[in-house]
Image (cartoon, rainbow, N blue to C red; front, side):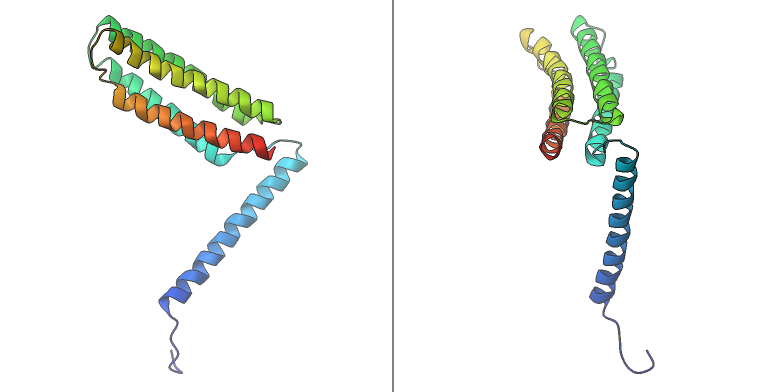
Length: 160
């Protein structure tokens, strides 16, 4: 600069970060006010994103199932993944429809738990045949996503 002053990089970074965060906060407030004025209930964008991740991961897992083979166990797992996807789509519909009560979030949790039971069913099918499930890694990941969704739904239920 002409008078010998320099702007420090950390200070510039903090200033830019504050401007960006202020813009995000303003957008959230506007969204909240719009939803309230429309009589709607806010859906949790983080919960919605997690559900979308879970649906996508379930769909990818279902696509991979039939690559493993054509045994009855594989067909059963294919069916359970399909049922899980149906449950998750129902949960997404509940969330996008606007949940107005803690009971609504509990219903969403119940539907996600049903999807998680479907993943467990796939693992159980292989366990009963005393064979290692080729889907255990997918199922563990999907169940962890389900737990994450249910934790968020539970937090949202307490805030409603």
